[in-house]
Amino acid sequence: MSNFYTDNQSLKFHLEHPLMEKIVRLKEDNYSEKEKYDYAPLDYEDAVDSYDKVLEIVGEIAGDTIATNAESVDHDGPTLVNNEVQYARGTKENHDTLVKAGLVGMSLPRKYDGLNFPIVPYVMAAEIVSRADAGFANIWGLQDCAETIHEFASEELQAEFLPQFNLGATAAMDLTEPDAGSDLQAVQLKAHFDTSKGTWILNGVKRFITNGDADISLVLARSEEGTSDARGLSLFVYDRKEKAMSVRRIENKLGIKGSPTCELVFKDAPAKLIGDTKMGLIKYVMSLMNSARLGIGAQSSGIAEAAYREAVKYAMEREQFGKSIIKFPAVYEMLTNMKVKIDAMRTLLYETARFVDVYKAYTHISRQRKLDSSERDEMKQYTRLADALTPLLKLVSSEYCNQIAYDALQIHGGTGYMKDFPIERIARDARITTIYEGTSQLQVVAAIRFVGNGTLLKMMQDYSQVEVKSDLEHLKNMLSKMTDQYAKTVEKVQEFNDAEFFDFHSRRLVEMGANVVIGYLLLADATRSEQFKKSAEIFIRMGRSENTQKVSFINYTHPKDLGDYKY
Image (tube, rainbow, N blue to C red; front, side, top):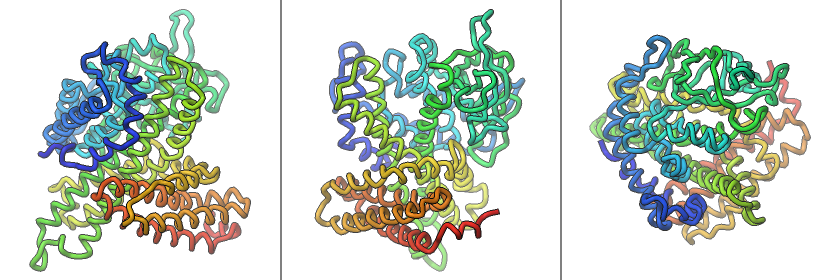
């Protein structure tokens, strides 16, 4: 197969975004490690060249190994042997290949045998792997857990666990339980400190845990007896070598079948506390979930890219009524809209990743020295921007991923419904993206706060100040009018001073905001490169039409109408 990095110009385009120079300088602490490690970059150009070369290796492995194994992994899946998970043959080959290439623990510091990569190239690698096999991306992508240990655990725990990732350790987030899915503050798995053993002990059940039989697991548990809310939860790291956790079963899923989704039983399992007690959900898991949602954005982009390419290939080869079906307007419109949505979700993905990169870099720097006032202000600014865009990204990218996979299968016709073509697997894999790591409905709940407090509007206004090429001015004017329309619509909904009415329209308001923000991002991309001009034009026109429709619905509703919808 082709190299999944070099055959996609969009990836290198986003890797070379102007903000990357600042990100790399912060991440590399002004290139202070160039004398200590022979593979540390000397300057910005050297760093980007390193990212480029590593991503080319990821792209080669994705195309030649992971994608080649995808069908057999989907068919065989993991198995449970003596309460332990055995990966499918292809999954093991994929993992071993990436470990040998040094591609686990990419974002970790060099002192823990990581590559010290920023989030952007790591997310890019996740997108590439997801395009090859979305199920395997769940296993490889859980190295996010290493970043949580690095960010919040003691230096002692970091030294114990982080070097294991480069050696091939797998990871899991053990959060959900039979009665605690979206509502994580209802977690009941118990943790108590055993003074005689000098360690924390875990007892209870976890359910729907991706890669549950991992080497290193982050476990959310109730450490404060008598509590029932988030303030009683702490986060622990569990080492599988303790052999005090068993896998009760592997779930039989619709898609992403290569990644084992497990029900786990902890019985007197020794574990180590990450950070402080009572902060497990409030601080650490919230950070972990944001990283996971960024990962789903990458996974969604990868799945969408795979679906789109399968659809184009089939549409060019399939002939009906004397010509290939790609010549029919009904088909080429679908394909063009798919490409536009991929460009849209990808520009939002990497903008979010860049914001995360900046604030995380400042967070790590603040542990080495005191930040000056301008640095503190920048950290707060980028944290707020990342917090606003993360739920927006998860919502938009997962919904677009499903739409694109659905349309790609539709283009295949009846053939797409059979097991003969990859699109059947890809469509099944896509379905989970709007569900796990917080459903689309929960992303709206998270994002609406930034509609209500004006953060999204301020973001639009800031984006509107960027200069664009003269031949794109008409699009900028269109976005300016859409921004005004959005602001007035939010104001109108808020005029009723009715929280339930505001919640009722929250998805419409969030999606309106997303259309404007993404429109500005695509406009900026089109200013940097002609390749995005068509996508910017089509997306902004589509966004204007969708927003007008939403405004029309909102304008003709009143709080008293909510009764018509209630059960």
